[in-house]
Image (cartoon, rainbow, N blue to C red; front, side, top):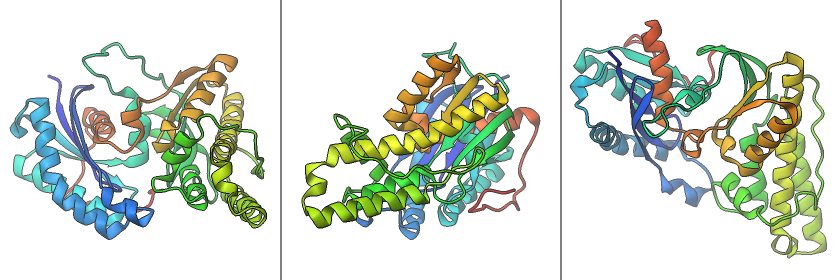
Length: 340
């Protein structure tokens, strides 16, 4: 009998719940938090309070859309970390209480593992969706993480490259702030880059050995470039906004793809995937598609809804754990940073 898995995600500012029946997604409800836009970024205290307000209605809607009763659930999976600790505690505490009241297993999920496993979600409308075969390469890119991993199994990701300082998503957001764009900055750069010249302006290229990334130098280069041009022309940003956004986006995507190409060549792996919030970036998706055609890779790009934080990926990771009999204890705690 196929299990029903309820997934709960609360690592940052989105409260989400989803239900899987086997590998098929029945519902995926996400409640965002607009309060952070006025502050130019996520305010942790506001985020945790909003999760407390959203968690019950979001889970209720997920069950209703899935057309099942909570007593039909086989297990509950929740994000244990990494993320904002206050936000994580809301999701994990709710999941613990619900699993205890229903007498069903609790499953802890690592957020980064879930992003990778989002590629295995299927829906009734696309039951034959092609999923990656192990091993495959996965570039996981978000506001807090940038890494390349050889994925040998559901929970066997060998990280061969990671950022040594800033993440790519953070660099998008910081560049947007430099340009005076509202939060979320990465999304705004992507939109405004349309029609811009990606080679209009050049920024410093990160030079780090191996497959590791560094974006602090690029971020500083963008800051100094814009600062110096504004001294010459106070209206420089307004006059060249599309070209600036396209050039910033090109620099970040080029840095990401350079290391990914090198990793694919080194490992000889032809299955290549991207995951995480920045995988929603149109330039990155286009660059991976083009590289796949050029290099003969089998490319896996997540649907936009599974790129950003969502509970469907948590439920999918939970399904893999459920099948392997890996369950959590009520005494387990959330963690803000990736566990080693």
